[in-house]
Image (tube, rainbow, N blue to C red):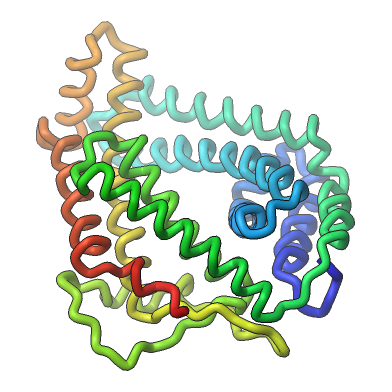
Length: 324
């Protein structure tokens, strides 16, 4: 990609490289990077390489997408255990042994992350080689370029809808279906930020007749729904404003359900590991501690199925997202 004044890849690689350089001087680089939100530029670079790999099928995007993903996944594991430990600390029914289990797991992934940072030389100007390789992929930010990205976006949307239709919007698995679907939906939102203005929101002249109230104060005021300004002399992709805000609401609601499910799942697993209980007894004990119904998992799956069916099948928010 020819180095120009505007380049979304270099925008985020510069951010990440600055953090990596500072981290190299820390005793615990992984924990420092986690605390200083290195995960955000990693997410953006993962999103950019993911979308461009689908659109242009260049080796650099595939190779670096895997690298960004592996590192980001480790920060995701660190975050999961640290957040759960912090949340469960406020629950007096949770034992010190269980809290220690989450702290130990968090520390284990911090160590794994430090190992990867060292072995893969992330702390040694790693992104210089990415920027150099990127210069071999030359592009003008014209309609031909944005059309290729648009085709890939539409393909992703079609795949999401096919995934839902295959299940007939009756989801029975938290991780393989609901969590995975949320990840797929979230990429559409991440692309809108990562492309640094190449995606712009456009208000439709038609009034949306949605079944759910997507336009909550939280959604309308979210910084993630304020997209970067359009770059000069560049073609853009347009997203329908109402559809994009509805997508934001859907991702948020699925996120709440995902967090509830994961908290129950991980607490149950911790109890099973630490106490002389069966898996079923561990689940029951975790639900009592968290104040959940016995049917919590089934309830989460039912709620997720309902909101996804309304948003994607009835309101068709993804069908109207990309303005072609």
